[in-house]
Length: 318
Length: 284
Image (cartoon, rainbow over all chains, first blue to last red; front, side, top):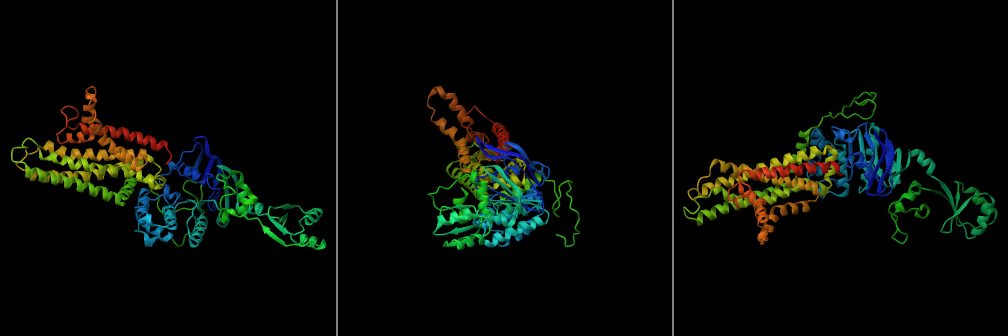
């Protein structure tokens, strides 16, 4: 269990983390979601005692991080995969971590096997790919077989097989009764792994809800209609009491998930339809609407298009 | 993990915090664990082998070269007042750069690579990390310097047997253990500066500057009104303090005997306290 109370971090007059209060419970995967620069990593560093909070406090099973005598058997963390000396082999990297916490030497080989790095155990970490580095970081987190696990953007740089592996791993760890806290800026990733969701934007808590609730409230569906007789269709739909929104692309969007009444209305009035389709607003869009106000680094409209995972529905979100 | 674990109602030793319980025995960690960890770290990177290898090469190579040159070029009587041990000075002065570099890398390279975050997460007591690094590095530097300087001293004394006078036991002690403690402390000071500056190149530059700058500055102080400053810079410069161990100081006043050791011990202790305070205060 990780408990945050009024956690605040200021750098000069810039507030990175603003009065965060939430609890990460054992037995489930808790997703920690926010756009880039929202303060996720800063929060995680404060949980691990690396950064001193300006105000507020963090407790790990009731203790401050500094009070943990053998922290690696209590909490394992993947902060960023590059927190490794490139000149040291994977084996020696894990060995020095194990020694600092009195963890048996045999565990090093075990975790190397778990993450699938046994073959390159004696190779220097600087020759590792991003995905291998990530696996080494995860091995370090698992080393002490801890009750609490924290992963900062674990799927970064992993191939599809690796992503699938880490998803399964996180679920397995949580099912064993461990506390799993994982950050991401990808809603779609969280939807697949997390049971609970904590969303922050510009350091502030935006949502602290179960994944099921989030999906229920946010997965809005609507009907998209396109017609050459747009004005007439608008009148007809308006007359029937169906609220429609005009989008920039010339299509109309009707709230509610029913296409039939719209099709029938169009037929009765002899209106030609070019498109009539049910659309499901993705969780990604819901997330972006939630965080739209607080996105730190907005792309300008004249800049190259944002990648797909983020890009779908920029026009609606902002 | 055992195959037939009954589904016990899980309760943590602490009581109110349920959750997973690991089969790995819980150990109360202490400084010994941190020292073991730092020992693994220092022996598992190539920069340690490089810096110490070059160090031994410089100390032994220059020492033997100096011994050979002197024994060939001087006839009996020329150097009868000097001790053969003093020839070890040149190799150690150059070699100290390697020890400085290794000292800086021990701390600063962890900041460069990000390893420091992993280290501090594994061992939240920052004082323990710094002390463990200091102990491991100091021991390594002292042992290597002692071995190299003792070997060079013995070889030089036997090469110049009859040319120079036989060193006293006090001179033996200063020329081996004394200089080794001094060089290891100089390296420890570099380790501390590395922890404060958190940047390898910056810290190495500062330390090499600290070794060379006073001498160089003193060389350019022509004005007679600065005579006193000039002398002080000369006498308290690190090369001159190192030469005190071989009793061939550049000046007659200034530090003598074991003074340089106490001076650097004091400086290192103060720097250590400062570095510790900074480490506690700053974010990693």
